[in-house]
Length: 165
Length: 165
Image 1: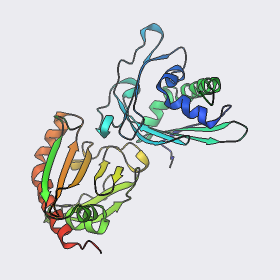
Image 2 (image 1 turned 90 degrees about the vertical axis):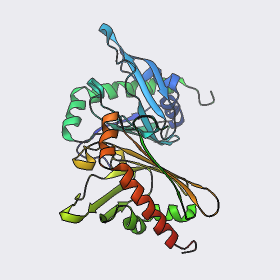
Image 3 (image 1 turned 90 degrees about the horizontal axis):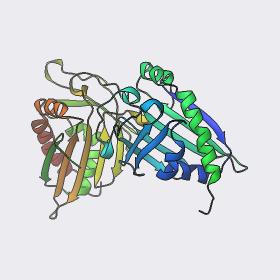
Image 4 (image 1 turned 30 degrees about the vertical axis):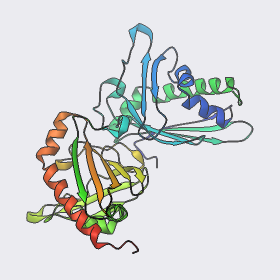
């Protein structure tokens, strides 16, 4: 599925797949790791079903603030395995008007998780773009650093969660 | 769900809902009614699952030919009830580059069917746009005439199908 227009991040996370899924899909958990520190998520809307909203507001140093932002759309939800959302569409699949900055190009994120044994999780995040220009823009915005940092934060948060909680 | 950016077509079709669904989702059937005559569908790719391809090639008088066109993406499939696809995304949810003519703006189509008794079907087609300008463009391209004509062709084809075939 991935092609030359995509950016890919792969990590083995030291946490069980159920907890990584929980950390990824619980809005209160997601809020705590989804922005690379010192950036923070100040608001989140997540309706975990195809057609549901996915929207975050990110704030940071020097008054950085994405504002409410354009809402994205959840496309696929397979528990403990796969989560897909896109910024090309909003809730109920309405096409989005592209915005500015990190919202200037449409993107689809395909997140896959797999049990890799010993309580670890194979984590893969693929960002799909429509062309090489958007891929390059995203790369220059710091895809690898940003998504890499948050993968570490995701691992940390997942480890802190209890399987039974 | 529909708002002021949408175009809506509603018809009661004189055919049972199972046959309308069949006429809508069988590529060989779809080919025979999806273009308003004298236009014709010369090629069709339809993979009826979320993330699957939806692409048509339309040809017509005076050498009209959409070419292979940009592939769209199927989003939801609920047998006999609901079919959603979008031109904002391609197969596997990759964001699409917009093209020309009828591909110059992104659109999501939400088709709903319901049994309205006496072997008839309530058919509703909603085209979702990102803004009023795209809605107006689509309207001027002849949405009501085009989708209205094809609704009649859909009814005609559905009636010609047998429930058991």
